[in-house]
Length: 463
Image 1 (cartoon, one colour):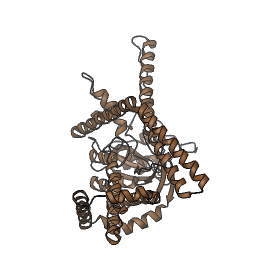
Image 2 (cartoon, helix red, strand yellow; image 1 turned 90 degrees about the vertical axis):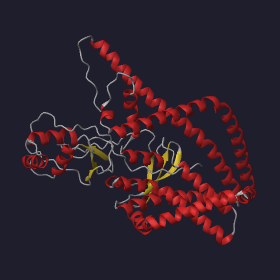
Image 3 (cartoon, one colour; image 1 turned 180 degrees about the vertical axis):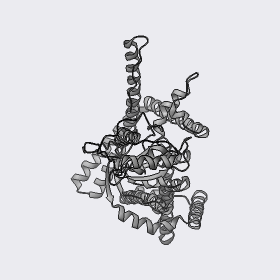
Image 4 (cartoon, helix red, strand yellow; image 1 turned 180 degrees about the horizontal axis):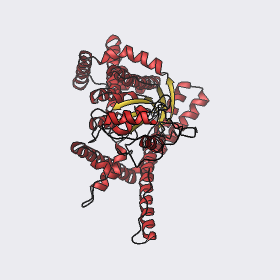
């Protein structure tokens, strides 16, 4: 079973799709005293945003975070059941604008209710649709409660003190130099190969290190002054993964968010140092294999094109919450003579350049993946099938012999052969499906425009 650890927030902020201006007034209606749903939290303005007008964040009662303009955020903050006229007066004074009760009612009914921040006027259950993000984590199941995570994070957060971080990184660098120049891990590898039980033990320790990785995100979030949520497991494409709810880190500044992003890989480094300490105490060579494997996992997390830690690091460096939603508008805006899409023009110049670089590199990476799959898939699948047959034979032999250790090793080997193939295939299909849906919608709009005839405007669907 191939396990990768990622740290998606419980819900990344939804794209800022709410306009800053208030639409023409609508009748306020009698008896309408809108109130934010219980559990809704006004987080505040995003620090270090890459947008020209930094958005404001509100966390819904279900944990989803949405972005609002300043005006809508201020209006939302006044909706506590007070009279609309009183709310309008408060907003007018706060924003130095003339806001009427009818305008506040319009915003509440047509903007905030659809976002799931306010209960509908008729008392029906609120609509709490979640953002269907590309390549996002699915089927989450908590395993450690929020209270327990915060207690653990409070104990571990001193590990982020600057002297501790510097000493840990220096010790890991010294260990790597020692392994690369003098000792090596050959002896440990030979022992592991000769004793399959040790391979299973190292695999178990790797799983524990992935859980420890999530503790690093939680501790970093707590160190910055935010409150981490639950730790759980989910499915990312086809891989079972651990996750930590660090949605509250959005209230931190850019440094705090980056510390939260890097907390997991830092704890992988600490886990490797723990293995080094065990080796120095016992001289047991296979522990050095664990040190190297931890750093391989660490480097794997920095891939920026899927939702691993590297993606979140790039996102927080630029100050943009969901980079995948910018791919289509960035590509469209790169065409000569084409006006920039609003989702591109709202970016600061440096952020636009950074997002464009990420989009181009992402497309290049996925294109290269498609080429590799096309060219080498037949040979790879043949070898994988042959290896899978051997693993299945190993499972059958283990069942006949009654060897639990051999059975576990063979089962894990079969899963590690199947999951990468399934994951790569599913990633490719998801991207093709999203691209095909976009092209189909574009062609539908063109056909509708042609059918309407000249001089007729076809309404653009709103999201």
